[in-house]
Image (cartoon, rainbow, N blue to C red):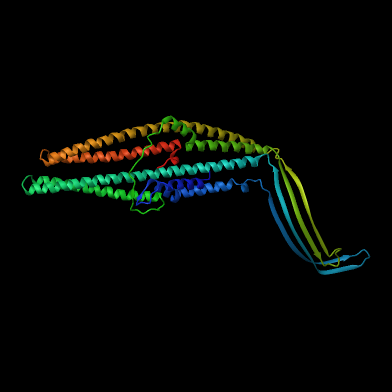
Length: 439
């Protein structure tokens, strides 16, 4: 399928799921990347060049037709003796000559070289489409890596804002207690130090969030305003099964498809080289017109005009070229063998990567679920510690530790959440299914 048609269909598919909101949805981000990313634009143009090259106009199957035309003027002094002995002199005799012709040249047979080269160009086009797909997949993965980093930083920012609010409430409480003589100034100072630390952490993560949004906008070709939010809701494809996905990987993995296409191209290279052993038969034809005007008294005719059609066949057979064709065929066979070996190596490499990606995805899902449970434990611990702190049964250090435990649990949960999703996308990319799912 033409890569532009593929992208257009994919964008239309995404359009049904995109929402006109201030939040930059995942589908909208993919749509913007496909439309505006410069790497994708460049590779799309490369595919268009390959599409032009595989057309009939570049196949060698069409004849060549050339037109020629010319004219000349000769001015000469001539002296001649007639048969009766009379001498005639022509001073400044002028001769005008005109000609025009149309010439046809067509190769009837070239040892099937054109056929194999034409098929090779089609495979080259297919390879360019695969290269474009690889670029699109890589860009989508890169985009989502940044997108989910923004999502993680956004959730981390909310957690830090909540932590800072709790610390400010603690400082207010400490000031009241100090005013009424229920604690020492040390409690107030400790609360102020914790607020400062929380504020510094919040300033840092907000700046990191701004920088990461700019990184995403670069991937999107600067097609979106910097002040935007992202969707933090995730849907995991938990119905994925290993064996069907492994089978899909063997059929659709981009690197295996590229390797097979390179093998096909090498096979056509060998056939094209072998075609040089056979003769070339060509058809030639022309239609010409000539006219000559001569005002010399010595000329037999004052004007002469000819026109007509001519045609013929020619045969060219390179009986021996010093062995260069034989050498070329041998080298192409070796190159083909290397391409086959490369594919076998890739099969082993891709299967290993698939198994690693599958295990990594499963492990990260388990870690994410554990972190979700850990959030509940940390939340319960903080709520109980907070109640005891209000009753004076725990000190500020214990309260702060419970607060930090909850914050760290939330940050770890957020990290595990998006690492699991990125691991899923890596698995889909290796399987060749990345562009076939709804994000």
